[in-house]
Length: 538
Image (cartoon, rainbow, N blue to C red; front, top):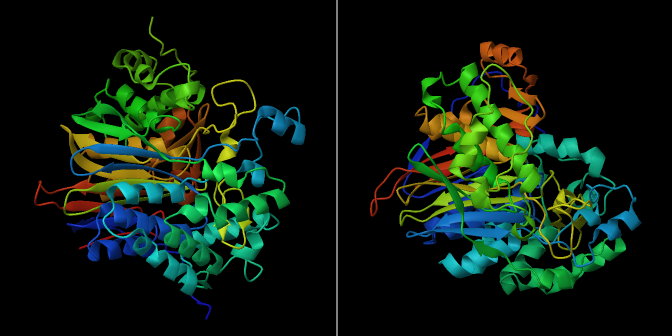
C-alpha cells in the first residue's frame, strides 16, 4: 500500500540522548537493533558492531554495501586498536593502463564503472574483528542482515530521497537496475525492498567465515562480472587482500586526546585543525558567533591544505604524520589566521631541518567506532547480480600523475572515511564519527569543539548547525546557522551558499560518551537527525 501522507516535517524535532549500559547507534534503526540483538544474545560490542555493519550494507545501499571498504578504532577494555580495511588496487592498475584505455590527458581513474573499483575491505574487517575480539560465532552475527535482505524492509525517508536522486545517473550501469530498481524505478517511501541476491552472499560469507568472498565463489563471480564489463580486477586480487591492524594517531585538545586512523586516510586533518585551535581561546568566544565559526573554518582550511598535498599510503608520503602534527609546526600555521578575513591557504612545509558510521559499547567497557562506505553514494554503480555485491568506487581517488597518490598495483588510495575515538588520561571517553566525504574531519572538529570548549552534550552538539568547507574561500552553511553569523562571515570574505539538504552537505554523526566507571559502565548516546537513525540500548 502506498502511503498518502507527506513525510515533510515543518516543525523542529528535538532528540534527547539515550542513557544505557549497552548501546548501539547507527543511521538506520533496524541496523542499531541488529547490533542490540547480539548484545542481548551475550555478545560484546564488537559482535554488535559487525551485526550492525552487515545489516547496514542492506538497509542503506545509497551509502554502503557488501562491496564497501571499512575502518575501525576499538577499545578492548585495556588499550586502543585501529583497523585499516581499505581496499588495494588490482595488480593491473598503472597510470598507463588508464591513459591507454581512456585518455592520455586523464587525471584520475573514472568515477563510475568497474575501473573505479578497488578490492572491497568491509567483509574482511568483519572477519578480522570477529576472529580477534568477538565472542559469538561469526555466522550468528550475519543472521539479522540475512533476514532483512530475504524478507525485505520498508524504505525510510532519507534513504529513499538519495536512492531516487541517484537513479538517472546509475540506471544503465551493469547490474544496478536489476538490483536496485526492481520496479523500473527507485522504491517509494515505506515500500518493501527485498535483496535476495545479497541474502545469498551473506549466507555464503557466514558459512565460510568470509572465505567465499576473498577466495571462493563470490570472488570468482566478481572476476567474471568485471571481465564482462570492461574491468580487470581478479579473484587473485581478492585472495591477496588482508586488512591491517594499525596504531591510531592522536592529538591532545583541552585535556582530552582525539584518536584517528593514520594515513592513507584524512583523519589527520581533524587532529591538525584541533592542534591549530589549541592556540586560541575558543571558549571565550560565543558558541554560535562569527568569531568561533570563522576560526574553526580557517583552522580546517589550513589542515586540509597539508592533507591534500601530503597524505597517501605512508610509504609514498614525503613527510610523516608526526611531522604534520608537531606542536611547533601547528602553532606556526595558527599565526597565519586573520580574524577579520577569510583566506585561501596553501600547504605548509612540516619537514623539520559518500558513508555509514556506527558505534557500539557494552557494559564490560568495550567500545567500537566503525565506518563503512562505498565512497560516492552507490559507489561504482556496478552490482554483481548473482550475489548482490554493490561495489565501491574508491579507485577514483587515485591520481594518474606523479605524486604521493599516484595509482600503482596493490596500492591503497587516499581515503575519506574515518572513525574517531576520544580518550582522557589514557582511558576511553567517546567513540564517534560523522559521515560525509570531506565533511568527516570537519564534523569531528566542530562537534568536539562544542562538547569540549562549550560543554554541549553529544546530542546537542550533533544537532547544532554545521558549515562545510569546499575549496578556496567557498563554504556551505546549514540554513539553521544564526543569520547574524552568516552575514558577518560573508563580510569577512567567506563565499557562502546556504543549503537546506543537510544529508548531502553536512554529514551525520553517531556518538557514545562513556558516563560510568570501570565495573559500573554506562553511556550517553546520540544519533544524528540528519539521517533515519537511532541509538538503542538496555
